[in-house]
Amino acid sequence: MAGPCAGQTFCCPLAPCRPADLLSVQSVQSPDHAHAVPPAHYGGDQAGLICGFLFGADGLGQPLDSAAAARWLEGAPGEARGQFAWLHFNLAQVAAERWLARHAGLAPAFFEMLHEGVASTRIERVEQALNAVINDVHFDFELDASEISTLWISVDQRLVVTARRQPLRSVDRLHVAIGRGDAIRSTADLLERLMRTQADVLVGIVRTATARVDRIEDELLAGRLVARRARLGVLRRVLVRLQRLLAPEPAALFRLLQTPPRWMAAQDVQELRAATEEFSVVLHDMQLLQERIKLLQEEIAASVNEDNNRSLYVLTVVTVLALPINILAGLFGMNVGGIPLAESPHGFWILLALVGGFTVVALWLALRQGKDR
Image (cartoon, rainbow, N blue to C red; front, side, top):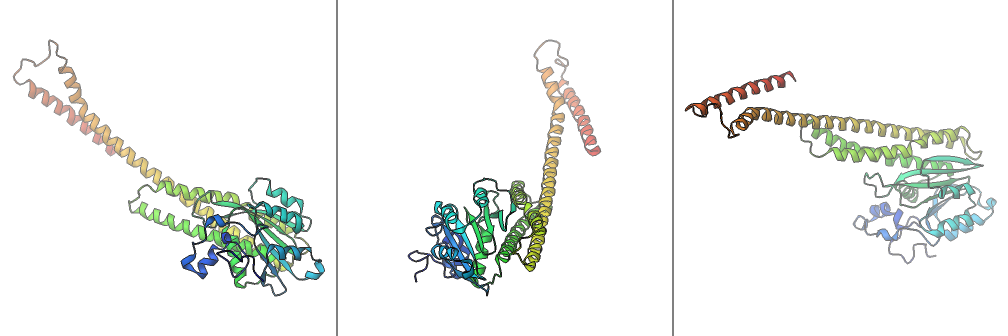
């Protein structure tokens, strides 16, 4: 049977996912063609499904397209005992929301979240289902504060639905792991794996930012700092935005796990708590890096102010040294009668001595004041 990628130039052998979320898979399989997928092909199948998996008792995911997913969802729950599915949709396709409303049986609160326009992280319990809004970095994230987007999630006992408008890195890594054969026990286990993957992505971001800060700090200590303050500002803005968007996530999960849904096993609850704690540690590391960047910015600002003060001091000394000759030149250049020493054959040398004396006194006073500083 032809797969959902039939007839397309680029297709994943692991699952029926679209190119937008498979760049990392193709980079593993064929490095020479890792960048061959054009961004214009972002999307999914005719229903907006980017990728789907059906999990059995062994926890291994079997690829699902939108037609197969619709048939499975319409089947009686008793016929799918022990099975659960993950469906990942592209909301940029209008058909995606219509398909979800028609086949997925999601709570109205989930569709309300899609249109709220509020990107703050939160996890809510609606009867026996979980609805979540979390934030993740784009697939091609390059430490840009604008490259952060939202992922909407609905989780119940037999179905996990994730939806996004931009390709996201954590979801892509999770899809690749499942395609490689990683086993998933339950929908709660899938949520826990998504959180750990998100934490791994954040760890990579923190490491990259830390390496850049280390280089800037080394150059600052070596006195070779040139135009780096703006780059520190960019890093700090990225980390602040990530911290603001992601910080509520652990607290929301901790509150939820106080009264978990009945279908969530005790082992899943425990592992979700552990994943939440790991996520909190990563956020704490991110906060420490922000403080370090702030201290570096203050040190750079102090160094710049010191250089400016030194330059102003030199300019002031030069101005003071030139003051006596400017005053005398102005007085004797008025071209009026009664100018002293106008008839004296030694007038020039007398004035030169006066100017030299005043200049030496002014230089001594300026240097004395500089030593006192």
